[in-house]
Amino acid sequence: MELTGQTRAFVLHFGEMGSRWGFNRTVGQMLALLTVHHEPLNAEQLAEALHVSRGNVSMGLKELQAWRLVELRHKPGDRKDYFTAAGSIWEMARTVFEERRKRELDPTLSLLRQLLLNEPENEREAEAQEKMREVYDLLELLDQFANTLSRLDEGDLLRLMKLGSGITRLLELRDKVKGGTASKTDR
Image (cartoon, rainbow, N blue to C red):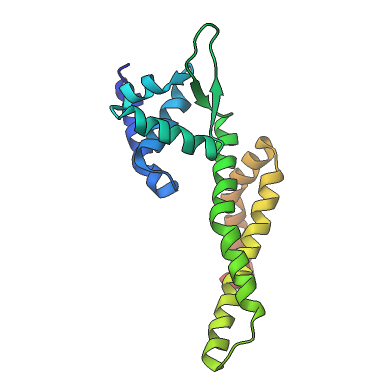
């Protein structure tokens, strides 16, 4: 299977971005290809299209399954495993967000909770704990916001995202009306 120009550009770019999103390059490319391809693909087809080894594809598919981003499919009369992207683009974005939260945010919050329960041994440690408390409070607020967002359906989430720039303009207008006295922390 040979990739067309636009598909190839998308797949290659997704591979490069994958490392920034928590995947390696090949896993990012596999996810991109499975997302835009109209039919489920098997490991051999993925390896051929991406010019990577079958073993690399096998490991990548296991990682994508662990992230809950691909679904296993079977074709009648064919013993091979076929894969397709799991759900809509919105569902996959939500899954990546939830998985990253589980892998990155939750352990950090847990560690900070533990550290903040300890009595500081000296003034330096007390100062460090104050900063840790600020980090914890920010991450806890982000976690609560993320929980709220994860409960929204796709339509409400899209409307909220479109409101973003409008809210920013509203806050700027508020600041002008107040004479510019409101600080960024008031927001």
